[in-house]
Length: 568
Image 1 (cartoon, rainbow, N blue to C red):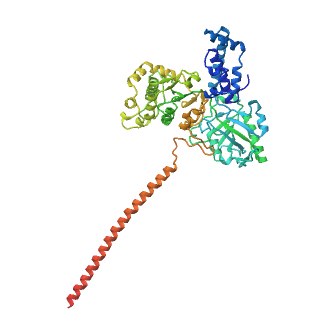
Image 2 (cartoon, rainbow, N blue to C red):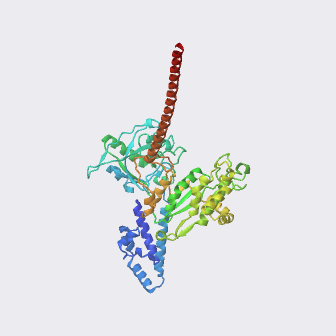
Image 3 (tube, helix red, strand yellow):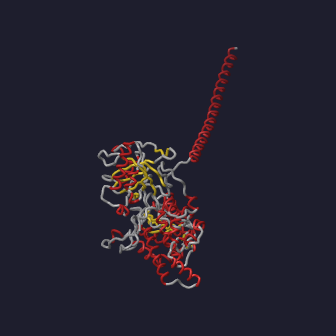
């Protein structure tokens, strides 16, 4: 065995094992040596190297299959044993895919000595992506790494270090200038990750590489979460933590490039383990404003991907000791303290128990109305089908606005009464949901409590830990990266991203040119209407003034006339 350093290599191995399983059980003809390449390409599995390895099976095994197929009898014991072993390897490979953290996010391109120093990984560096910021999912971005020595504050402020402006890079083949993003290197220590990334952003960083100051290995980083300190919501650029050993090489390359006026170039990429059908797991809380807002924004994308993606909701449930029931009686389902949830509004009317009840209600809505359909893609992925619960997403999409937590009327507030009205409104079978709650409520809470994630708000795509802000568009981009063959649905709901522009989250308010034009038009109309009113006012005032002056003049002339008549 050799290290698998690219997503393509892992997919090739995955395909080979899949072919062993299919052939060993007399399955898909797409793995047979006689399958035309065009048919393979149509299935999204046209891997020339993998096909050659997969079809180079022992002649005796192939002949045995042919004989058993012709005689319409079960495969012989050796063939069954080989098929069983193949299945074992298949699921071992699948497990490796499902438990991996992330593929190589950094690929060294230049200088040559730096590439050679990472020969053991074929020039790739694996790090831990920050949970804040916006990684370049689905894109491969070239950038120049730059570094500035700290003045004593360990890169915690922008004025602590100076970043030289990198020169434009010219390719050797066409002498064509290529624009590179600015990737700033900083060292870990003394302040939070978000503080360092914010300081680097002030140096026009498009991405940040944080060099660890501890003796962690690459394997250790796979289990390391680069957490948000609570102030990372406004960070729109990606960042990744690398080991001290790898980082020192990058720093040395950046220093030498600055002296020689050359470039130290790397490629950034965030790949997701790929499959024909993407499986997503989301950990959340029905009492979390962030979770419900994300689901509301994500609902249209989920409906578009309903035939190619499976979604499984999970809920954050925890337990506390039963020594002081009064301290947590509003957080838990009962005085035992076994199943508890966060209080979403502090001293407000909503309690953790209310959240637990809504969690169970949502799980039952999803289970009652979940429809599983077997498709060609699910067959290729070896899954029973693709599941989708339309009523669940209709309910979730309207819950935050229909039943807000701060409603003044209790009937319209987050809770059973408002939830029941909403379920009837979107077509949920309330009777079946109530029966599900009675029969499975405790079991669901126990299941969720025993299946926690690394964070109360977490997302997993094909078994891989998602990193980045929980934004509907960014998550959709990551999901679409997880397909072996990108479906047409992804083209309709994703758009290209400019790596030189900080990511604009879908929840952020962005004024478009059309909005600006409409606002200007409204402003012009208001000003025009104001001018018309002012004009009418002036006309009225002028008429009144002229009338008054005329009357005064007439009165004056009449007085003069009376004086003349009196003197005669």
